[in-house]
Length: 198
Picture 1 (cartoon, rainbow, N blue to C red):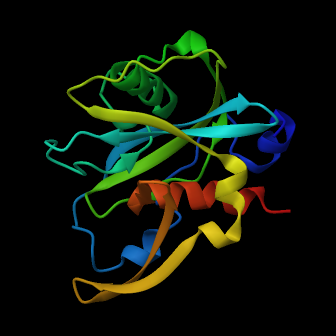
Picture 2: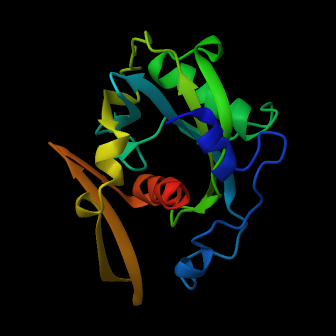
Picture 3: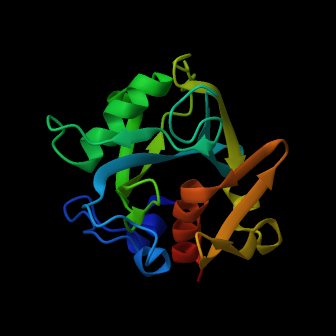
């Protein structure tokens, strides 16, 4: 997918999206009264053959939050970070060895709120074709990629209504081989896929 197509559907780098998340109404009654903590992730795209791959990580099993889940590189914003882009780049280098020099940011998706108390700003970027991941063993169990074309196939998207803490929610899921992509990661991915629809 050419960058000009992405530029048309993303928030520009000079104008990051503002909270609340696009899914905020869905979480009514499930969030605490306290403000959500700011966080950012990197939705990294890499050219592969005739298509584009999306990079994911699988978190190690002993983490306090979201242990063993598939995610995008990223995390909570530090006070020293100059914004969501800085957070996403810093966390990506810490987690998988992806340096800022290997990243070409394109724009932002809408913010996404999580029931774990974060408002996540997704940064969409191209990464160097030759990048070789070096997972941090304290945080990342595996790095893998999924073809964007596969993710865009409607048949590969599962949406189901479930009851959670007395409230009905829609859960989104993609199952690629042994990998279950769900939760916040699937929600952020869905925002990209909907924006890419003609």
